[in-house]
Length: 397
Length: 230
Image 1 (cartoon, rainbow over the protein chains, first blue to last red):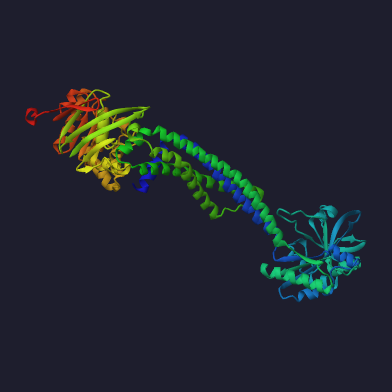
Image 2 (cartoon, chains in turn red, blue):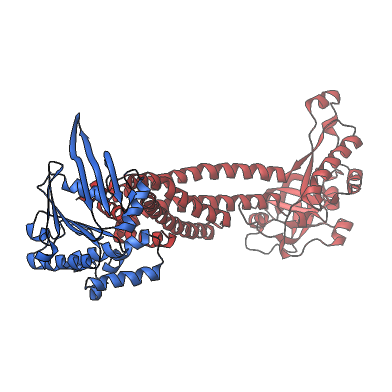
């Protein structure tokens, strides 16, 4: 018997019991839809987390953390400044390193007229803003001469502006940091995204920072490489170089943001897997519903089966007919489920500002999986139908 | 064309063996019109199922068109039913959701025929039984006699050598019965072998030969000369 005959036969008998077919499909629709939603949101979330953590990408932070062993050997180790100007020059000599971004931070109070706030005051070099995705919203950014001349100018974060200036424009105003005057030349854009909270911060050219605090060290060095692959090498080389220069064992280390992102990605994948398997259970329950209805259908249509057998249908043909019927049921349900899942996931992404990723793999998987459910849960009823005795079936009332 | 040699059918009900058919020997020639009669429980239905390849004998051999089908497997029997036998039932046994035309198409679907050819042949069969104007009706919209005509069209559509009719007029009034039997008569005259199971003597009248079955055995067979009928 032709395949198309089976399909049209299956559609005919599904149409004969519209309500029943729709209700049975509903189980599959909800199941497939739920799986699609969970996977789409999970993958979207993972992608977003990764993009936010790695930022503009390919950066690695160097940090100074002597082991207890080293501290015992050299008790003064923590009193030396961790990074020096000559370290930067040495790091710039590593071929894989594209940029060396230095900064120093210090917490101190910032005041404007009678208002004051505790802020993180960071001295930066010219690569810092770009690398950390910081954009100036109002006013201007630092110029080359600001960096070279160590001019007393600063950029303030959105929160700092809120704290000290409220509605007033801060551009051109003089704020006091560690009792030294600094001119505000610009306000940074309010950060967006998942981790986007603005803290009270002020940025100054590193030279300015050094004169304000009277210190000459860096507290932070971040390296940027041309590619993610080179970043690994650059990070390792830099740590080794600094350990040699400072005559330390393993005090200089690198944090790889990619690794953190990977770790977080793993967490979201596990979450997706857990929630996805709960959604999968609902799909399983939907499959049981299909099997139940197909069993009822076989019993109801015992006489039809007998007639078909008398007219020359083989057991295989009867089995195929019922299998295709259950596959048609789950396949239609699955396709509607994919559409519903797609719709809901898109809606969630609109309202939550969260990208939802519907990959073709997920769609193909959904279609394939609903077909598999049709086969698995249709097998028992179809087998039952094919095993019927034609004589008894013809007599069945 | 049909030859049953020492056919027996034994059902086991509980611990008892019930002989539904007992050592049946029967021969039916191509082109015959045979009536099988007998009281209920006589085994005539089982005999009919046996001839129709719906049931397998416990013992004995059944030759259909020269071939021993008693050892055939289920799938082979299905093919024999499809190609060589047309069934007509008392309760018509049409599929209620299919139109008359679609019902007639069914045996050809299982024969793997192409759609255009199927529709052509189904229309031809319906024309033969005088229902060309009712092709698109569902069985519910047809009278008893019309339903039986559709069933007959379905039985003849694969050009079987044998038509088996189980109480074909049992659910019809006298006038309709007559027209249905006339239709069988016409098909018989065209060369189709017809076996009718009935308990109505008027129906058996159409047959050239009547076989009486009682207690699973052939009790008597009476032959009517063709000349006397004409």
